[in-house]
Length: 248
Image (tube, rainbow, N blue to C red; front, side, top):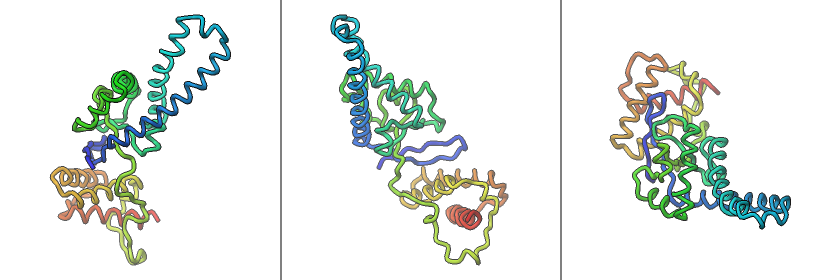
């Protein structure tokens, strides 16, 4: 599975799994079915309200059968990604999401650019252009992604964790937490740490090693720990154990 390293606003680099082309195609198919269904319902309602006038005016015919489906398709993607935090209903069903490559939250302008570029990526080329760019680009970006500096990642990682399953502590009563300040971190922080450990152990390359070092340096500052640990992996595992004990 191809990954991308994204530096968060807390200056921690996290490896995310990029959405595969087949997942994005399936997502687009689901979204298209939703848009077509909504369009047919709206078209029936408009024709029922307008009667024969809907077929007598050339301008109205152009709007109903030409402009409306195109604008509706782009509007659906824009509004759904804004309201669902980077996901259309198709993306939510397939477990993928839009993110910015620089680690910032996507803005309205980013979502708007992605929606507008569906015109060449999807509509005019029948999806061929978008598919070719996604499959050939290093960050799996179509034109809309390139314009908005975004890509699409998996929200369902290959390695799934629940906080209770992170580590098994044999005796909580006998365990003495070493870093009590860890209780100020969140459950999501702990899941990210566990994911970072798992990624490093599976792929101990330079990128993941750098991510590990940067995460430890950041946590030392946040938790006000003066002594730099010699074993960074064990330090992260200790933080996770301490968090479980202190927050149960």
